[in-house]
Length: 191
Image: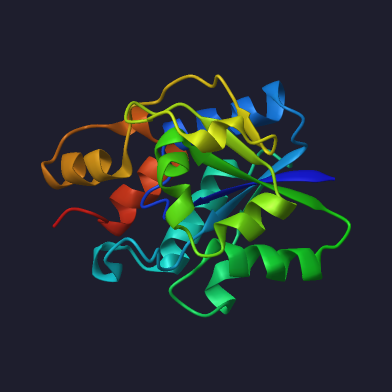
């Protein structure tokens, strides 16, 4: 089975993430998409993140009605900060029957050469790259393992959502309804 790994903090998961996952399932050869919740992205301050269990819970709530989507806490068990290459090695050992590909924005492709052991990742895994506003052309686009996917541009960010909640804005339509309810109930991002 070909599985797309959508790595992220998902702090919180929003409709942009959902639209991209849905697009990857319906318009590429990926059969499932796993949301891999990163407990600690090496490029982000850990203190700015909601606890990983709450972020996992929000992803589970968002996708519970779709069996082609999965919330993965695989990186919670691995050394932190999380490096994609280590996660991929672990997943390949645990699920040798699956073929794993990465889903990433064009902005990440531009800095992909800075990732730990990026050549090793490219040797064994395809990259499904969706457009982002800040995407820049890169030599990696010519690599046969890189698939440029013309998914809709979603200019929604978790940062914007957190700030809007802090500013007491009603942004319920930016999030899956059950996630919005969970955030309100738990008073997340209000301070």
